[in-house]
Image 1 (tube, rainbow, N blue to C red):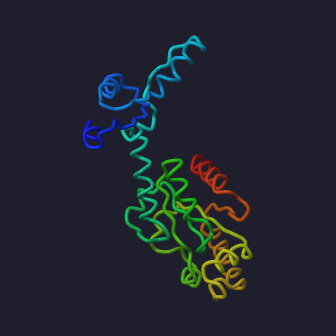
Image 2 (cartoon, helix red, strand yellow):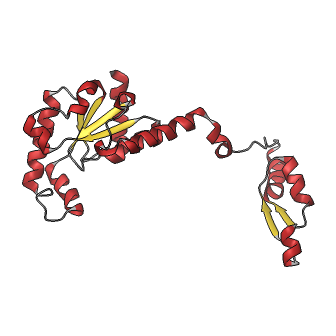
Length: 215
């Protein structure tokens, strides 16, 4: 109504409202209202000989569901525990992904959080860990939650060169060394792992979920 007073012409309103009380208010407004549902739903009801439910879609009430809240909590957890940023509350993690830098830990963690509501942390295995031949101290108490991701040295070098071209970090020899050390550590520590080289994130996540169900 305010718009029609200011502009001296009635506003155009395209409505998909389902709630009849709100729709009635809209009809009484000083506007040219086109109810898209009324235009199409009634003929469809007649053709199909069925009454529509007039139920508000899931996206309008999904924020009220506990499942949605749990998923948001899982996403926040995964972001806070990405790449070893924080070791606080790792006891609350459903899974902790480990592996060399750029082996696919971050996207897999976020996928598990967003699609499956899992609190998935990830922690890098770095040269200092290989020299000590021990897991990072922050992970020692959570061996049962660990799942490893590996990758072929060739693919790892390619990925790292996109980030730091020509660096020692991205060199094929260094990648070969890190991958070999990481896989040796995972075998020694009894950590279940897989190679992410030729697998999609969905495939990796499915394998992890199966492993979590078996533990």
